[in-house]
Length: 231
Image (tube, rainbow, N blue to C red; front, side, top):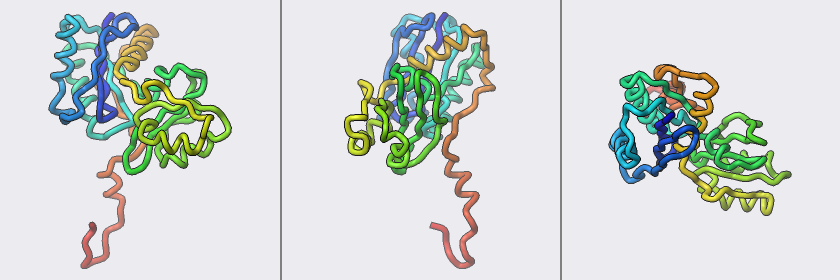
């Protein structure tokens, strides 16, 4: 049973092939190129290097967020198009769930860079989500974590590792690498859902937007005073 997985929740991104729940091949995307320009070519290249035809894929998996709005739209649309054309299921997987799976420790804080000095974060203990995904400044996220040893993972943890160490001291731990590729564990999570009998249709996938898109926020701003211009 083969699953083709794609992660575009981070600027780096990755794609992977998972067979019977085990990683067959995983490759990092090219961060120097826009995601729209490198897809679906990177998926085709992965399959070619693995010696697998598209017709051999049984299901697909895509990262649903949180992350870049543009990245999520491109990644989800790409996988929806392929899964629809091949008439196969498409699983949506949280980047934070994938990070927690990689960490495989009792208590892990999963941080994805949200830009603007913020991180998307969730807290897991023994594989169970304790705190749901939220977005805020690293200093705010660290407040409830000062009394216990916690392992951090994700590109948000990599970006703000100095803040974490300064705040938690020897109670802070980090995965190695701090910011791992996510497509592989996304495919493994999708395989477990497949085994449980789930077969989601491609059009059922939904992005995980922890922060509202800029366009929505702009619509909610009050109109500027007459004679002035909104910057």
